[in-house]
Amino acid sequence: MIHNSFFAELLDELHQTIHPELEIRLCTTQSEFVACIELHQGIWKFAPKEVLSTRTLALANLTGGHVYGVYRSRELIAFALAFMAIRDGSPYLHSNIVAVIPEYQGKRIGRLIKLYQREQAMQHGIQRIEWTFDPLEARNAYFNITKLGAQSHRFISNLYGVSTSPLHRNLPTDRLVAKWELDSEQVQCALAGRAIRKPLASHKAVISLPRNIDAIRVSAPGQIEVLQAHLRRQFMDKFQRGLAVTAFELDESEAHYFLN
Image (tube, rainbow, N blue to C red; front, side, top):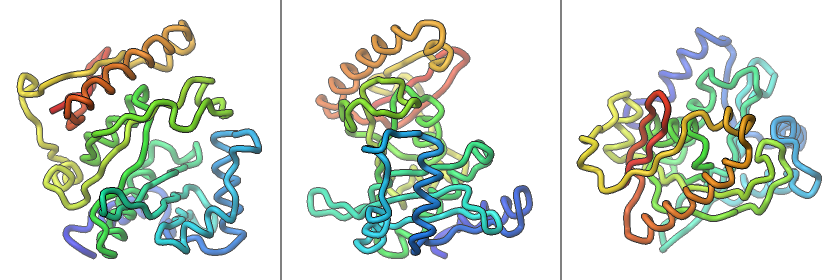
C-alpha cells in the first residue's frame, strides 16, 4: 500500500472488534449488484423511478468507477458506488453512494470505505474524489470535513429534485460538493487525527446552523425549510466571492462551517 496505510490499520482494528472475516472487495456479478440495490433500497426506500439498476452498477465498473462491497462473512453490510469523472481537464472519482445497513452504522464502516476508495484511487493515479452531502446534516459534515479533511467550493441547489425517499422529508435536495484532495497535507493530517486548526478569527466567514436538526424536524418542521433557504443563500454568496469551506466544528448547540 502507498504512504501510511490508514485503511489497513482500520481494517485490522475492525477485524478485532466486529468480525475476523470482514472484507471489502469489488462487486462484479449480477447477484452482487442485486444485493447492493436491495441494501440501498432498504435504507432510502425510493419510489421505483429512483431505484438503482444493475446496468448502472455494471457500467460503473466498466468505465473506471467502482462498486465496492463490505462483507461480514458472506453478508453484504455496506457498499459504495463511484463513477469516473472529469472537470477542467482533470480526472477524478465521483463517489455517488456509500450505504451501510443500520446495524453497522456508527461502527466506522463508512470510514473504512472512504479509506479504501482513497487507497485504490491513488494506486491508479487518481488524486481527487468528490461527493455531495446535505449541508443540514452536521454529522456528515463533521465526518467529511473534520475527520477526512475534505473541503467544499461548490453548492448545488436541489441537485436531485424533490426525492421520493422519506429520509429527505420532501425538501429540495440542496447539496455541498465535498472535494477530497487525497494526498494533501490537510487530508494526511485529518486521517492521522491531527487536523490542521486555525484560530477562529483567522477565518474569513462562518455559516452556522442548529446542531439538533432532527429534533427541529419533529418539533417545528416548518423551520427546516426556512433554515435550508438561509443556508442556500449563505453558501451561494460565499462561494461566489471565491471562498471555500475548509473547516467544521461542533459546539453544544450549533454546527459551524468555516470558510477561507
